[in-house]
Amino acid sequence: MTLFPFFQDIEGKTFLVIGGGAVAAEKVERLQMFTDRILVIAEQTEITEVPVLLRPFRDGDISLGDYVIGATDDRELNRRIASLCKESGKPVNIVDDPALCSFVFPALVKRGDLTAAITTNGKCPAFAQYVRRELEEILPNRTEEILEELYALRSELKKTVPDQRQRARLLKARLYALLEEP
Image 1 (cartoon, rainbow, N blue to C red):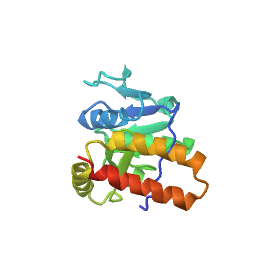
Image 2: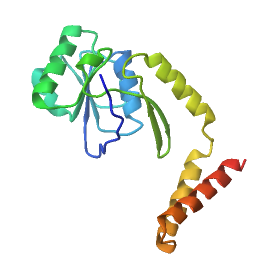
Image 3: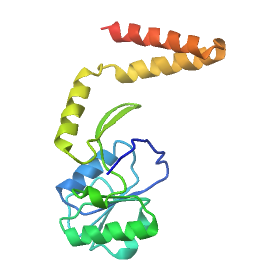
Image 4: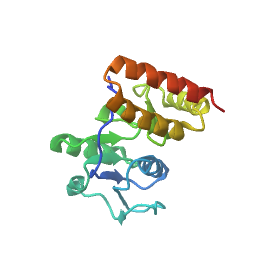
């Protein structure tokens, strides 16, 4: 599998999570960093922070989500979910089976508007998690504050400095100064 890392606007999109165990709960938790439009279908679950339909999955349920995550412990059901998504053109992630996925969940670092995604193309998620932890350690605690200041400066420079290269130099200089501050 060859993955291209890109970020997509998910405004107004719903994530359908099929399954209610620990892995499904972990996917829901990660999705909640970005959206509250999450629906879970499971026969039983302890997930409570998003809407849950407590019942078995039905083939027509695929229409309830714009993105589908198959997180059941039933391999055959996960394959059926992947097949239904492929037929209907829905992006699908089947946990622990990269061959059935049209998208994957990368290891994520999120600090305000800064999001970094790390993947090993399914070869070793543990290594991606290691890199995520290392990245979290080196990011400044003030990441959100730094981003806000640089965004304001960038907006102002667009109005006052016509040369893009000069704006980039000024922004970079301010970034390095902010990184030096305690």
